[in-house]
Image (cartoon, rainbow, N blue to C red; front, side, top):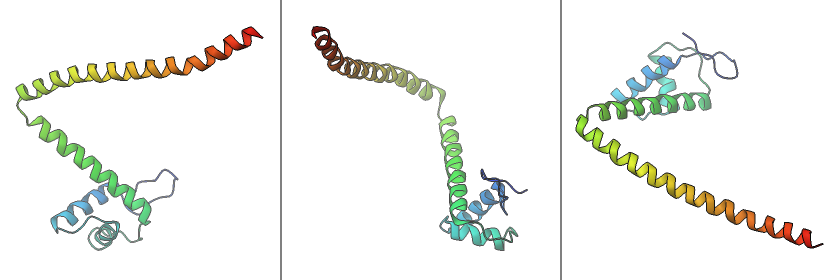
Length: 127
C-alpha cells in the first residue's frame, strides 16, 4: 500500500512499512533515525525510491508518538481500578482549582484592560 502525503505526491512507502522499519531498528538496537529507517525500508522492506528526509522524519515521529500513547494507555489500563479511581477523584478536584485560578486571572486581566477604555470614555464625555 502506498500512502499519499498532504501535498498529494505519492510516497514510495506506507505508514505500515515505517512502523515495521521502526520495529526492526529497535529490535536491532539501532537509533531510529531517517537514515536508519531509509536503509531498512530499502534493504528489508523492498522500497525502491529513497524517501525525502523531512517527510520521513515527520512520519517516524508520528509513529513514535502513536506508539508512546499506546504504551502509556496500556500501562494505565493495567493499574488497579481503585488507584485509577483515586487519581480521577484527585484530578477532578485539581481541575476545579485550576479552572478557578484561570477564571480569576482572566477576570483580573479583562477588568484591568477595561480601565483605560473607561477613562477614555469619561475624558471624551468631558469634552
